Image (cartoon, rainbow, N blue to C red; front, side):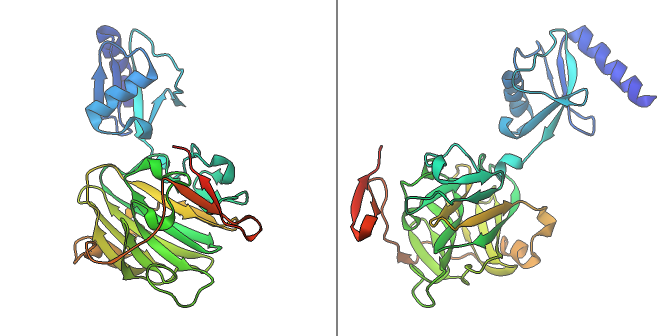
Length: 307
């Protein structure tokens, strides 16, 4: 068959050149590596240089089997297939300084063991380029929560509270408060230390925060249950991690990454429309890097965070 003929040609080429031939699912050559890399890690790095696909998003497959990190590549060469797997971009990172306080199951985070006031949880891998659509399913919000993107992986844990986040987020508002302001109580766009504009509150169980991120143009758009709330520019050039901020043991958030065509059309259109001015807004007051307050038996207790 033509498939066997293609395979025999590839094997003949590999044996003659002693190269690792990397193709995509369609059979197009992505890289021809000679000499053969000494490890899977080295192969991933070479494929990233040749194709731009980050090593963390690569699945390397040989003869129908996904190659593990300790797999050995034959010195006389072979053919492997590289599949781009974006799962790490929408699953929560378990390597969190407060891992004992959260329960992560892939794209779902719960925190029944939360004993501090909050924990910031980030995805395993960031958005580096392209347009991506995410959904935060807010199964339960005990008090208030923030969902969005950040360039700082060090936000993970409890060093930065919600109002001190170096991030661009949908502030859900407070579940138990009917009034308040865009800094505390009402839903809002919170952008790098400022409350910019009122958004709909996102505190009902089952609310879905729709988020579109253009990693190339650095534009972020939010909607609630498909209703556009606003879009803004995200300054900087570093990759963007998806973030959620949980602050009660009842909190339960699911992150999904549907196909781009599943995004609400109004939200897609907002990427090329007028953007909110994030330089204007009300300054947020929070704390970070120094003290975290607990309330044992009604007494304020300052707990110095470790550097």
